[in-house]
Length: 512
Picture 1 (tube, rainbow, N blue to C red):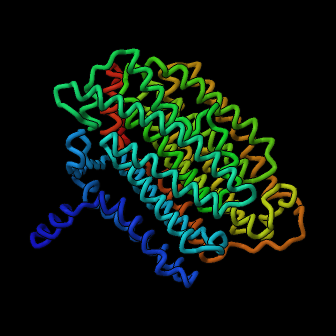
Picture 2 (picture 1 turned 180 degrees about the vertical axis):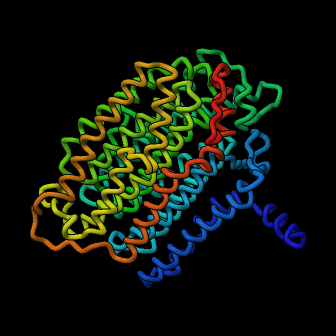
Picture 3 (picture 1 turned 60 degrees about the vertical axis):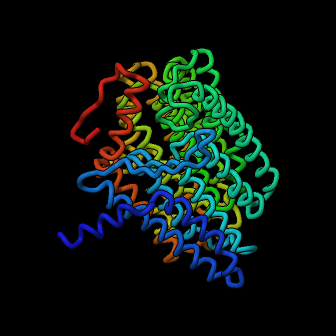
């Protein structure tokens, strides 16, 4: 083992966080070299995504397995006159979302076989650029740098929908961009205000997250700044009533675009609420927690009601995202450490389950020329492997014990009941309401007599690899959640202690 020590030390000293961000961006820039061949574009993009996944796995092995060396930081002066630094930090909370991003990136490449027909090099370059900006959001701990990555993630998704989407794609892309840009602009103004306040503090000009959490802001000012941050995050989550962009964006986006939206961009909103809004403005977070809880629960019931009326598979799944993320918001601001951990696990699970459902919705559209329930039914008999995979994703979304959705939702329910029985009861009722549209989704898609005579091919080897990977991840989190709960424990303890000092740290055999 001794000869391996210098190699291990050398590996640990490499700028892994920078590589995680800029490797997919470099691959995106290199994509035009392969534009003459569609298959070459696909092969290079898949290879780049697999390398990103391998780097994320290596970071886990180097820093999080055995004796944890987390957090990992990279810090370089960028604009010292303004106190702006290039600071990246990976702790347990960041790590699970970094790994999810890399995994969803591979899934996007496996799911992209029809939407890239027009301009394959540009299509895959936009996916890789999206991965880079999302990784930046999850790793930046200089608030100014975070705000830049937050705004940058809009650009590739805008073009992905506007160029490669379906139907009225440009109108939908502009709608998505305007909603997100307005929220981002308000947050950026709040970030500048924080920098101005910090300039008069003992540390001088700074945008470092740790330093800004120690500012003593006037309560009224803190509440306005918190509102600006939360509005930007709420649009991305999306939280009712600023959710209107999401159903159209999902409906018209290409399959990979839907995977990025549901699996990653929505998660950046929940992550940012935990990482930035809560510790920066703890008093404001406590003051506004009842409002955010009510909006989250309204979203849970509203999404269930509207989803039940949908006639398009993809649009129904889009509304389900609103409901699940609404429940996550209620858990995040609840003041329960147990519910906070459950919200993180639920967001990871939702990235997997929604990714699987959107990927299969894309398969339905490719095979049938339509995703409407009017032409579906009886797909289990036509394509049993497709039907089995679809049913597993539905059941995981419905929180069946043994699958990933159950762990997070169970933690949220127990945590909410500890804080407020009424909130916990509404959460349970809302989760029961989600079962109605999820069962309808499975019934009208897989069972009953077929409503169309069109053939429906079963999963290809590539599609089988995609769905098997997602299902194995759902099973792993559902059956063995300990590693995920253990790695997120320390950062969530710190954040909960900053916002709710009276909340006792929850410790269980699972390492919470």
